[in-house]
Image (cartoon, rainbow over all chains, first blue to last red; front, top):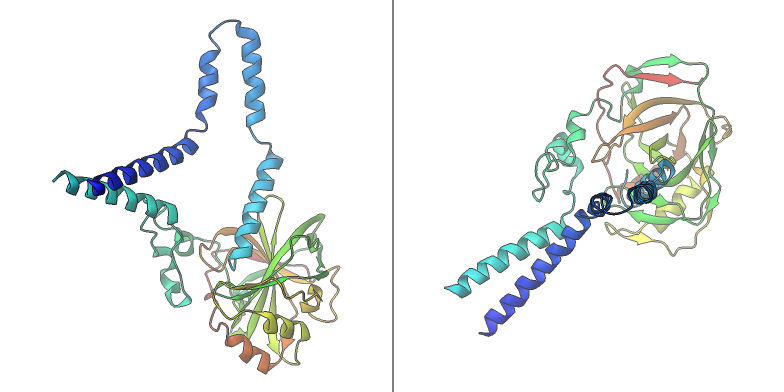
Length: 81
Length: 265
């Protein structure tokens, strides 16, 4: 009985870990949900809102470059490069 | 019976999760160099299963034989300026080379034209990686820089045997022997430009340049190489001391594949 309890705990921990890692992958999904809400109610203002949100969520080229640079710096400090 | 099934299920799920969590790039060594491209990461699927594939199939790989290259004396090349000031760096034994990392607040770097590329680290190979026909130097120093868009530029300096080099001795004396160890508490300060050839104009370096790659796995291409035409010197005793850390940590010469080498001389 004890073994079963331990195994159930292990399984639930594993599943919760997988669920967490799945959350990261599903991060782009909220944008799709927002698109779905456009058809309800006052269309024009909502569409503008969504566009604004989209432009905020897309990183600028400068931000992408900073990210690339910091990743590469981190790599080259740890490895011979 | 049910217990057995549960045990199997739990072990499969846990093994899978742990494998995913701790997945690291495969270990490599210089003895395995001919097979770097085929080294496998068993936790990944194709093509990620071969994270060092570029070492085997890349067409712009480094190092190269510069005597075998078509050297174009190009006029309007970028002016190269080494701004390697005083720093309190850390000393790292990476497991493949001895390396000096600049401190996070170090502001020096390599100025290529108008852009200043921060100096991130410098490390040593024994013998030299770049060769000039039959001539291979006893060692080679690489200054590694990362540009604002994440691209790497390396300034390579060949090393000859001569007088003792005080800065190099400081590096040797502070380098930890254990693979993967770091000495970041030495507090040692020195001028990094003292590792450049003496008597050169650091505001307008003479160089050869070509497009290449990292010389270690994953051998990523898109690295711009600048090879100084003058060497620095270390003593033979210092070379022997360096070899107590690593020896033969140099990749063999790669095909030029029609690449041109530009010179500003």
